[in-house]
Every structure is written in C-alpha cells, then in structure tokens.
Image 1 (tube, helix red, strand yellow):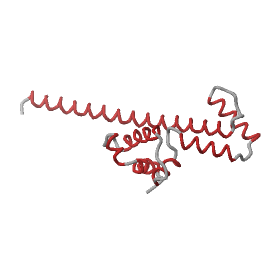
Image 2: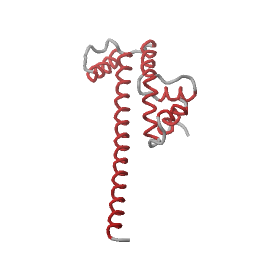
Image 3: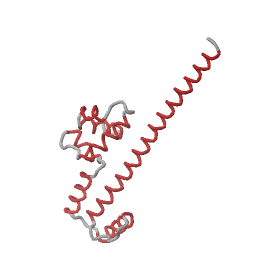
Image 4: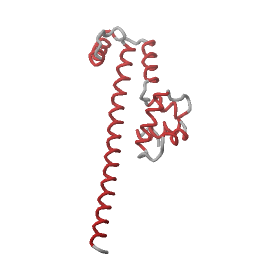
Length: 158
C-alpha cells in the first residue's frame, strides 16, 4: 500500500467515525428530548388533575402558582369528592402523554390510545428501540405491542 492509499484509508476511517459520532449525539439528544417531554407531560397531567380535584382552589393564571394554591386548598378544605376523583382520573386517561394506567389498558386491549397518546408513544418507542423501525413499521405492530415496549422499559412487565 502506498502512502496516499494509507492516507486515504485513514481519512475514510476518520470520516466514518465522525458520522457515527454525529448519529450517537443525535440519539442522545432524542433521548434527552423524550425525557424532557415526559416530565412536561407529567407536570401538565398533575396540574390538570389538581384543577379537577380543586376547581375552586385557585384563580391564578400561572400554572405553578395555581397548582401550589390548589394543593394548599386541598390540605385545608379537602375531603373525599367522588366527582373530583372521577374528573382527575379522566384527565389522566386523556393526557397527551400516556400514564401507566393508559399503557396498561392499551396493553390489555381494554382501550386504544388517543391520537396524541399514539403519536407520543410512537416517538418514545422509536427512541427506545434505537430507531430500528419506522413509524409505519411500529404502527403495524399494533397499539398493545407499543404499550408493552414502554411498560417493559419502565420495568412494569417482564
């Protein structure tokens, strides 16, 4: 092998490594974005559940202030309210980011994802499977399979 050939091989190897590094960085970014979206979704679900449980607990437009005021209101005035509990459960089941209860219900075939929950779950499963399948391929596996993948990752099922 001549010097230019060896140099070319070295450059090809460096380029291939750089491409792999970019792909690894993109996957890490996607995982971080998914984690951020999950936290935001959980916070949103919690805020909606608090609003359903204590609708008179706050008049604030700021979600964090309203949530804290509702927690305080519940601590002082709270008593079992079946209607509020039903409203909070409904908010959880319809939230864009599916909760464990939604995932379990979809996994057993008791219900389907909402459009938003399906979109979120497909994105999550794409990240969890390392981008091995396209959204179309994931959809073809079915909603129970998608829910199972997320539950497996959460350690909820074997």
